[in-house]
Length: 572
Image 1 (cartoon, one colour):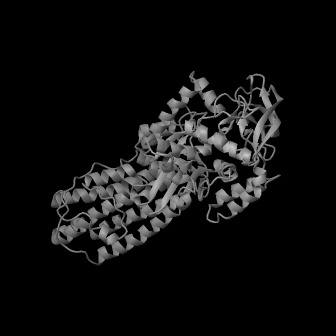
Image 2: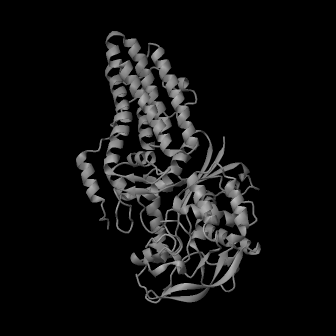
Image 3: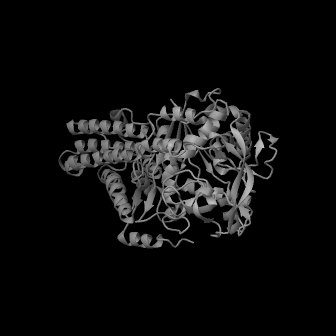
C-alpha cells in the first residue's frame, strides 16, 4: 500500500466555476484519488477555496456584504457544488483559515531569516478614480511581448509571460476602466527567486517524467528574456493574511497583506492541518503527509492544475518550501491541463457564456458531465465542448454501451430465471476468450490510470464495456435459452458478474451509476478485479438482485437545442 497525497488547484472564491475550471484540476484529481483508493492505497485528497486578494473584495462589494461574510457563504456554495459533482475531497478547506495565517507568516519568517526576502521600494500603479493602489491583476493593457490587448499586470494569459504592471502598454484600471493612473512609491517584500534559479532548475530537470506541458512552461519562465525574476509577495490591501515575521510584527509592513499567490499554495499544507484539527487529531496527523522528518519521505505527492497555474507551482511555491530550510515535502508529479473552450469560443465568467457547475447539475446528473469532461480532458492540447459532441458521447457511450448492457442482462435474467443469479452450465471457449480479453484491457486501463493519462483511461474503460456487448451479441443467451437453457444460465451468470466488475472499475469516472449498479445487484464487494476469472464469480448462483432503473437517459435533440440557447451568454 502506497501513501498518495493529492492536491487540486484552489478554485477562487468570487463566484461559481464553469466546466472549464472543473476539468482543469478538481475533476481529474478526483478521478485519480478514487482510483488510488480503489486499489487499496492510503490517500489524502486536499482542496480549498482561494479567498484573498482584490477579486474577493470586489465581489463582496458587489454583493453588498462584508468580505469575510461573503467568503464564508461562497465557500459553502462551492463545497456543496463539489459534493454535487461527487468530488471526494478528504478536506475542502479555506485559505483564510487560522492555520493558513499562521503557516504563511511562519514561512515568511523562515525565508527572511534565510536572506531570501528583500524589502523593495517600488513604483506601483495608483488609480485616482478608484482611490486605491491597483494590484497587478487589476491593471490591464497590451502585452509588450505578444501584443495581446487584455494582458494583466502580473501575467499575460495569451503567451504566459510574467509581467510587472509598469510593463503594460496603454494600461487601464480593470475595476473602473479609468486611464487616470499614476505611479506612486510604496514598499513591498520580494521573494528572491532569482537567487534560487539554479536550485529550481536542477529540481525541475530531475523530473523527467513530468508532462511536456508542465516542464516547458516552467523552463520558459526560468529562461525567457531576463529569466526568473524576484517576486513581490505583499500587497496594499485590507483583506488577506497580515504581513508578519513569524509571530512578530514586521516593521514597515504595517497595513499590508501577503499576496494571494504566496499564501494560496501554502493552503495545501494548512488545509491538511485543518483536516486534522477538525477531527481532533494532533499535528502529527498532518505532518506525516508534509514533513519528511515526520514520515512524509514515503509519500507520493501529485498536483493537478490548469496550465496558467504551472509557474507558481513549479517555481514560487517550491522556492518558498526549499528556501525555508525546513523538511517540507515537494511535489513529485504535476499534472497540468490545457484549456477547455466552449462551443466555438471561450467560457466566460464575466459574460456568463458556457455551462457553470450549478446549471450543469440542474439539468443532468453529475455522471453525465464527469464522463464527457474526463473523456475529453484537454491534456495534449486545448479541447472544445460542443452540445452535439456532448449529446453523442452521452447517448452512445453511457446509454447505448453501458446502460443498455445492464438493462438487457438484468431484464432477460428476470424474465427467464427470476431475480437471482442462475445456476447450471459451464464456461466454454467463448467465455475463456472474454476473460482473456478483459484481463488484457483491464491491465491497459490500470496502466493509463497509474500514468494519469485521463483520456486514454476513458478509452480503455469504454473498450472494457464494448467487450461485454460483443460477448452478449455473440453468445445471444436469449436464443441459446430456447435449446440449451443451462448454457444460457452460465452466460447470464457471467454477464451479471461482468456488470458488477464494470461497476467497480467505472466508479472513479461515474460513481453514482456504479453505486446504482451495486445496489441493484445487492452487492457491497468493491474489491478490485486483480484476477478477472475470480472476479467474475463474485456473485454466486442463487444470489438475489433487483432490476435497476434506466442508468442513463438519452439526450434528445430538443433538449440539446434548448440548452445550447440557454447557455450562450445570458447568465445573470
